[in-house]
Image 1 (cartoon, one colour):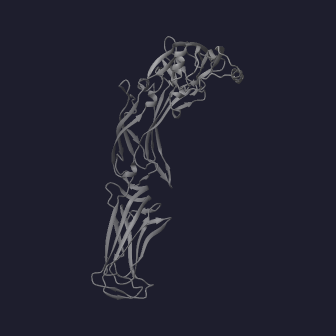
Image 2 (cartoon, one colour; image 1 turned 180 degrees about the vertical axis):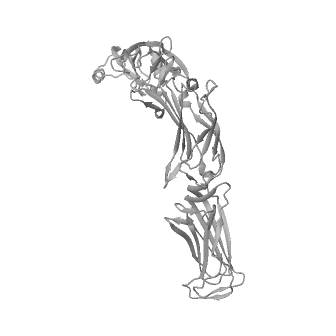
Image 3 (cartoon, helix red, strand yellow; image 1 turned 180 degrees about the horizontal axis):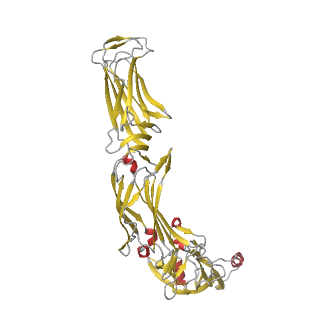
Length: 526
């Protein structure tokens, strides 16, 4: 809101004349003063956030809510748990062994991932670490290689290679490290290639061929190898993810709708679309138990009624073809003809509540272990609401506060305040103007009539009407204006008689100017 400082401008010529005179008798001049002290524009955009307002091709405002009801965190059902695997490799020989000698140990093994529900065959890692720790009591240099054939980066198997050192001061040789898992593929089908939650691995120990000394192995020597999956996060998984049940209990803030003008809404063209998108290779079922709203001001609640939406909704699994996902999307249209949507939104809700149940894989392992998920694009549910702003206007308020920062005048002033209004809405209105002093309203003008805009040959573009309102002003009133007291302008739109739907368009608004028009007195001398 723009504002102007209320000041009396004295021409420089008068100042020179006064400075050159010396009189004992007071001298007085009267002059006229006219100019705006505040101006602005009232429109629907001041009541509703810009992000919620969209104008269609005709310029008609629509109130749009596009909300996610829930983003099911299905990645939790396939995350690999933090797992620590400890293996002890006994060395079955005793004596001194030359460089290049291969120690006889069990070369292969299978690591089991204890997942509580999922039977995973393949995963792609988003982040995490594979930490390792090796301990060797052998007096010599050993070349230890731990290989996981199924852990690959660009199809290249990953391995851990460690050259041990002889113990120092009686302490076994110990080393630690990690592999960054980001971007790595992990095959979990085990040695057979047909299992799940199994990691095939090999471990080999050779006396370091580059060493100049043999390695001495004592009775009971064993190499301990510890491996830990630390905070692993999965971006893709394939397998059977199990059957899971979720409670759907979401609340959406509708306070922006509650800030709509206080009027009689005509919502016959309002629509709501519930959208469910399944980009996961699992079947699902969603059962909405209740969709309701609540108006905090009136403490009233209305439940949505729709015959189809409250039946169990079976959601088909997505399909995958060479890494490309074909998601299934379901749209459920809700409007005034198939529901009680009019009554639902005429409640002007501040909150929107959705309750229900969601089941993942309700029929079990019907895909023979070929569920899949890309965790960045999973199962989502949301709704989009479109309210064309065609309202039956009864007591619809457009209001704004004007902050005046005038310095107190040093001269008496009598005259009028003029309020000029330009109404671009095709309905009649009334205007009230107040001074706000200590939280109380002081009437300057109350419930003054403003003429409606006049229809024109251009559709939805009436010719604005102009109205002038005179407000008597005096020194007391001017003093209140100059005490940093804000002004409140309140315009009320309404259609006479029964409510008639009137569209609110982007090119409609009310301009106003508050003008001071009066006589001030300059007095020079004693």
